[in-house]
Length: 151
Image 1 (cartoon, helix red, strand yellow):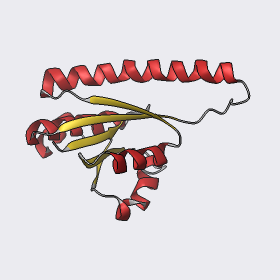
Image 2 (cartoon, helix red, strand yellow):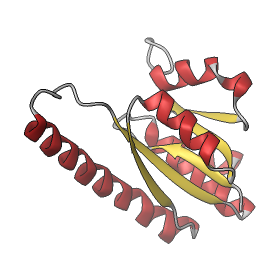
Image 3 (cartoon, one colour):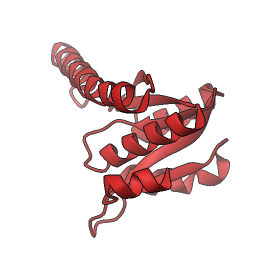
């Protein structure tokens, strides 16, 4: 089954990327893989602090995932899987894409402010030519109605 890989982070535009991935998966008989990346610890010299921070990050990720997963199950009939990785976000996204041959589309949300689309979109589009699948970039300001119409 082809999966849509979507990145779960704290950005506002993540919401539209989640919606798009779930709607497309529901309409095409695909699945959704939700990837969240815990960045490397900046407190490596305090191992205990780093472990506590990592555990708090995992709890936050699972709480956010459950909100999205419930909506996907209830409204779209899609049961997403959660993948949590640790490291540099771009490197971990690229690693996940290369490791899972079922991923057919990488879905990213683009910020709508004047600073640009966001660091993930900026960095991953630089690698787009070497990826084994297309990237779909979902504008953060699309309405629910517009998303429904285009999916």
